[in-house]
Structures are given as C-alpha cells and as structure tokens.
Image (tube, rainbow, N blue to C red; front, side, top):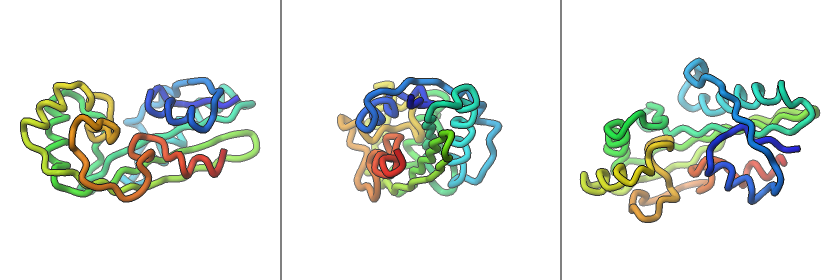
Length: 178
C-alpha cells in the first residue's frame, strides 16, 4: 500500500495522477525543529516526515514532500496571517525566485530522497491585486503565499522548470521512482 505523508489537498490531487490507490497519514513532524540551509530544508523535512510515518507502517511505501519558496536566500513558508501574506507577495513582485520541493520515498527495499528546483518570475503586483488575492483566502496555506494554479490572479510572468513542483509535488521526477 502507498501512503502519502501529507495533508495537502494539492499533493493528494497530484499523486492521484500517478497512483490511484493510496492512503493519507500525516506525520505531525515539528517542522521548526528541522534545521538546514534554505535549499536543503525541503529535502530534510521530507525525510523527517517519511521516516516518522514509515516507522508505524514498515510494510508500506511512504511518500513525503515539502515545498519552500526562496527569495534573496530567505525561506518563505506559509503566511501566519494576511499581513504576512501581503509582505511575501510584495517581496516576490517583479522578482525571480526559487521553488524547491524535496521528496522522499521509503520502502523496505530502499529510500530515495531528491530535490527539484523551479525558477518562477512574478509580474509586478499592484497593491490592489495583492489585497484582492489575499482577501480571496488562497494564500493562507501555501508556501510563499501563492498558488501557481490560481489562474484568476495574474501573478506569474514566467516559469523555468516543473510546474507541478511549484504546486507541491514534482510529478515528472517522482514518476521515475514509483
């Protein structure tokens, strides 16, 4: 049985395109206790989450992932409130930033951990656009306070790399190992 160690509805939807039957088991890892450089953090978090779930399900295949947005060597996680979301969106406006997703797959036979990096360039975002986007509620549970899939709001100017990586699960890379 496959297990996705994530409560993210976006990851669940993406994984369904590769695996039709899996269950969800949230790891409850305290992400604040995992220390690493900005570019290593998502990989280390995915390892911690996968290991935490695998110890209770040693006969299954556990898949865990974590995504961060990095701009100016600062990790932008999920915003803590609307003001934090606005701060992040102002920071990303007119800039190119990195989105890194680390994923780990653990089974009895092997452990695979990889990171995927995608470069995303934002349009210039007006205060009105940022306010409307934050008011929509969409930024609340997303790293960097945005979802690339939110087509109603013209946030993204350009993307170099995996679109699905920015959504939260790099399907192209993950598919190689499943």
